[in-house]
Every structure is written in C-alpha cells, then in structure tokens.
Length: 263
Image (cartoon, rainbow, N blue to C red):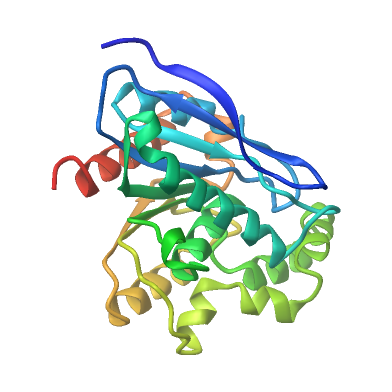
C-alpha cells in the first residue's frame, strides 16, 4: 500500500479567518471510510494537529481522517463553535469522493471536550447534509455541567475559567449536555455510537456515563461502552505508548471498519 498523504486544506473561509482541515489520506484508491476528528482542550485550546498519533494509525488502516480546526474563545463560543463543525461535516461529505471516500461513510471522532462536541454534533445535526454515520467519543466530557461542578468542588480554576469562556453560564452547559438532552426528552438524532473512557476518569464519572448509555439505548439508539481499567482522564497524554492508549486507538479503528467496510 502507498504511503499516507498528509495535507492541510481550507474547508471554510470568511471575513474573519480561514478554517483548515488536516487530511490523512490512505494509500490506494478506496473507497475509504471517513472520520472527522475533533480535538480536545477544554473547548478553549488545541488544534487540528492534536490527535496525530490516532489519525496516523487510522490512515494506515485505510481510513481517511479529516482533523478540523474550529473557532474557540475568544473568537467564538457555544453554540457558534458548532456552526464551524457543521461546516466541516458538510464540506467533508461534499468532497468525500474527491479524496477517495464515500459521503455515506462519514462519521465523527473526538477526544475529551472534542468527544463531547462530536456527540453533540451527531445528536443535533443542523441539516441533513451534516448527519454523521456514526460517532466515537474518546474520554469525552459528556456532561459539561457536571464537569463544571466537579471542577468547582476541586478548585480546578483552569477548567472553571475554560467553562466560563466557552459556555458562559450553567444554563448553556445544561442546554449542550447530551445526557441532559435525553433526560429532558429532547428529540435528537441517535447515530450508532461508541464511547470509551477510563474507569477512573475523575472528570467523567463512569456512573454518569453508564446512565447516559442506558438512556441512549432506551431512546432507540445503538451504543457501545468500553471502560479502560485504571485510566484517568489524562491517560492518553500521560502514557501514549501504554496499553490503554493502544487499546483506545484499536477501539477507534475497529469500530470505524465495523460500521463501514465490513457492513
């Protein structure tokens, strides 16, 4: 198989700025499944280069990865940031064939706050062209309101500041919380989903995650949950070559292939 091609392409341009996507294009002719990658960073930092370790492995497995930049505070905040992600999804679906992919094989993947954003984008697509075929949330901060309250209890000022910058207030955190969306009975899309996180994640309690998974299934969605033994929220950064990091990458790769080329 030919080597992966890595390139940056603009997916949106306006008077404010040009938004870039980093593409990891597998060798060969395809058709390739496509994963839109949303980075973490407490909704306020990070960029399209954050998940290169995961993207490279996915591309080697024949998966086209589209890692998006999107506007964050102080330029944009909730819910405007989701508009950029919507633009990225629609651009990817429109141009899928140009890069050897298929528009019906476009799913989403995100880590930490990106794991929350990709789930939110999957459950609240802004148009039919922005629907995702599947969603993968890696150690996603599923309930921003709960994480905000945990941060206040712990005195984690960096997270408190980030929440204020992106969300503004608790009402917005509640509005953008997938678990609370289901609890309120909000009508949402329910794409097939995979959630994985550490069973010792201090910011995403596994009890909350299990309750969300149960509610997702009760609402009619298909969802899988994997808990990584002993892993805290920062496990991938702290031990990028460790067994949990390797398992996280394998879970992502295998789920994409299962949802697309193996169907």
